[in-house]
Image (cartoon, rainbow, N blue to C red; front, top):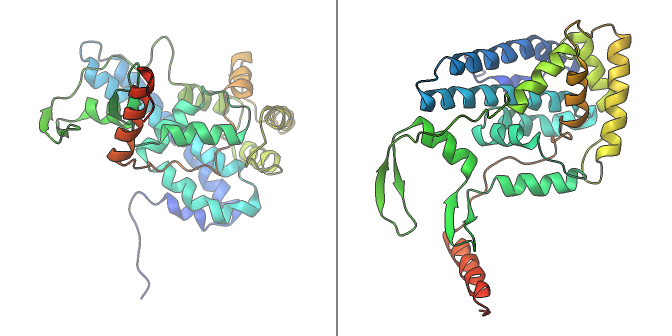
Length: 288
């Protein structure tokens, strides 16, 4: 008897659906995800006297909105690649670090996918060196700051000693604006990209080019312009669309990342210690 799978965390079903049904289901879900992100951000705004809790809710809003961008990359994926890449994309959809990197990546300006891959690979390191001369070994900041604001926990230091950490009182992640992933989600909704017809336009236009290495701004600009023209022809652009929404999608929607890996990379402590020692010796003018 076949195993019955039901309940939540079942986005993997997207991997096995026919193209038409997959786009149908994604189109149904995008407004739901955007509303969820907006709700978290609205709740955070009402917690001015509780900065830690507001920070946690802002983080939830950013991660929820990043799920929109991840699904859009599944839509942008050329049809011939969906079968081989959809599983990895869905795993990123459920991965906290992957969603955080997706959100951060919208502000990066790589020249092409190859450079974007370098940025992502650096962002997914479990630990790295920090400080003026790389004297400190620190955990992945995106993951650490998320969890340190949410939980009381036991931390282990480089020397092996253990200590309890209280939830940290980080300031707002919003700064002067809302998370970039959320602003892009709003722009996509306003441009009609959440409608079934709009999603078909996204799939048809972007599916013509595989973004794997040297593809960069020129390809992105041409496809974005074609997408806008076809969205307009399909009459799905909403009355809420503004020039700012167009600007966001032209200049802040990152290159497709369906070929990139977002799984956290473990870095051996010995490797970081050796690298740190080499940098410290170089700082004082010696070579190991």
